[in-house]
Length: 202
Image 1 (cartoon, rainbow, N blue to C red):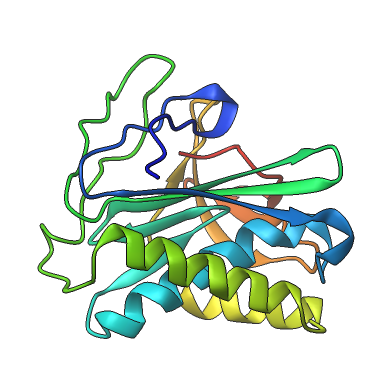
Image 2 (cartoon, rainbow, N blue to C red):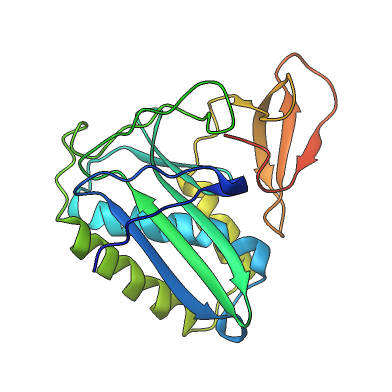
């Protein structure tokens, strides 16, 4: 079946479009092979790996903590929540349609793009969703080193683009990841480094 309703971080709407991916995978928390704060990072690398399997020339990059960028636009995002004994891993991928994203208000965010608009040849949404779910379950079934999650994410990340803090009138430049997945940043106009926890950025 087709998932018909999507939700982003802090309850913001994730706008679907015909031909796009919206999928949620339920993992038993006890099976998660790494600290929970690293799961959004690993999910991002899995999404990128699945897409690059079909479109190896597609210039995909990761933005902390849970977005996939394509030519500076958001092409995929994740939402991860705990419910009872399960980790609910939701992923949306703009395969065909890039929704209009407002630049003000509660649903504001980064400009969206789609794989089709960037001429990245990937299969249909059902195939991508199935391959993502399989890859996530395979990852959860094997021993994992936390340091590998940090390294793998870091090699795919966009470290060049300054980031706007959602709830502050400030822009920061990403520096490095800590072992628990928090991000070290520096103000773009100078000043001491600071540490961000998830859901500060858009």
